[in-house]
Structure formats: C-alpha cells, structure tokens
Length: 177
Image (cartoon, rainbow, N blue to C red; front, side, top):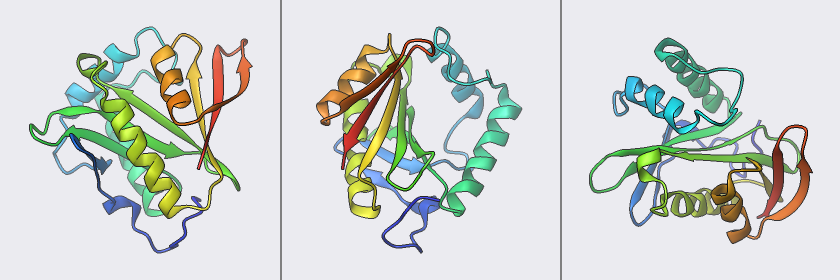
C-alpha cells in the first residue's frame, strides 16, 4: 500500500496538469483507444524487455481493470498522459511497488512524441505530487542500460546511481524527495 499522508486520498480521481499535459489515472471511460495503445506499446518497446507479456487487446484491458482495482486500494498510481490542447495520447507514467521508504517510478512516451520533453514535464509533476502526498524518502528509477534518455531524466531530478545489474541489463537510481 502507498504510504499516503491522507489515507483517504482517492487515487482513481487524481488529475495532474502541466504546461502542456494532463495526467489522468488509468480508466476504461473511452478516452483511450486501447487497440492503438496496445499497438503503440508494442512499437515503443519492440527492442526492450518490459515484462513477460507482449499484450494483446484483451490482456491490455484486463491489465487496466486490475490496475484500477489496485488504485482503489492505494497499491499503485498509474496514469495516462494526454496533450492538454489536442487531447492526443502521449504515454503513461506510474508509481508502483511501494515499500516502507520508497516506490518505483516509471514512464513511457509514444515513439512519435519522444524528444519533445513531455516525459521530463510529467516526471516533474509526478515527483512533486509524490513529495506532497506521500511519506517516501526517494523514488526508485529503474531503466535498461541502453535507455539513455530515461537515465538522463533521473539525473535531472537528482538521481543517485545505486547499482548496475549487468545480468539484468538494468541501472537503478534513487530520486530524492
């Protein structure tokens, strides 16, 4: 369970806004075309091992349902990212795997939107939200060794290199809160 300062905070209805983006919790309310999301996820991650699934549409929908239930239980906080003006889907950002002093932060941006600083913008918003609403001391930022842009985001937010797991091809940073 996420260590929230307000234990009654409703994670399913937490919306964040940045200069160009709106960050909204995962939902099945029709704002995301899940067929396109699944295709984009596969395209964006074709050369990266994300987890043991390469989801089809039904698996993606089941994952979203499971995630929403977990947010109701304050176990994680997973969000879609949209462009504020156009409403275009840009990616996702999440907080998960909480323990007593930290939890993971993750981010992916649609390939067509990479390099436009959306990731940095929403990362700042979620870090600020975490500082304001949780008791954590740091966020764990785990990335593939080849994913240099995501590693640079960690460094921009004061990330301290903790370990390199060559056997897993992973680097772990701690982002202080």
